[in-house]
Image (cartoon, rainbow, N blue to C red; front, side, top):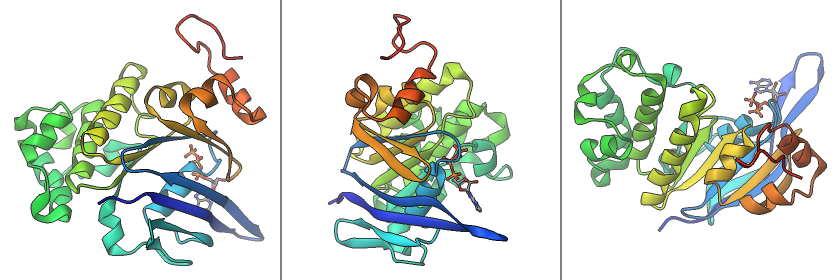
Length: 258
Ligand SMILES: Nc1ncnc2c1ncn2[C@@H]1O[C@H](COP(=O)(O)OP(=O)(O)OP(=O)(O)O)[C@@H](O)[C@H]1O
């Protein structure tokens, strides 16, 4: 049974030569229920990627804990435990960098499936889920467009049957016309398997379309957390209001959010 992912008072620091260390994530607490979509938004440099990397075990914690229910994912000062690593999969911003150009797509998706052992979905099912033909398996990443490569990265992550899928700006490198499609695809494939989705973006208008709840980060802290509608329509924090005001056309009627 998947358990709730608990991010409890997490801090991540970076050393800065000759200066005091930077608290890139500063006491963040969030939960992610099975099947829930949590959007994480905020300006560049506010700590979104650092938090995602900490959840995946790629950054050691300087404080707090991350766990599935009672089972720790990481311990203070350590990267995550191998068992927890499979349970959390990440899709990165740049599919050009995250896929190996010299290996066929099928064998890269197999890497994900291997992590799940015998229970993994079939390769053909994973490709169908992300809207790719079966013959994609025999081809190489350079034969695909940016949007298709991101679909391949999503299929590889899903193959591991994670409890939590993290998208770290997974649409930022795509054409505007593709961004909403890939975002809704991630939401739909996660929902099909009751996988939680932590979707990171600086684009509040897209996050609002797919998220159940939205957390807004600024300078390493969560400054606002609420349902997607609450945060969109009735932002409490001044920083969130500024993020909303920066969106040129908010609601299809040409109105800016109040
Ligand atoms: N490896 C690192 N070493 C030192 N400082 C870092 C490192 N990675 C990130 N930082 C700093 O930590 C802060 C948070 O960065 P982070 O990448 O998490 O922000 P972000 O909100 O994801 O931004 P973006 O949307 O631009 O990726 C920034 O000030 C950044 O310069």
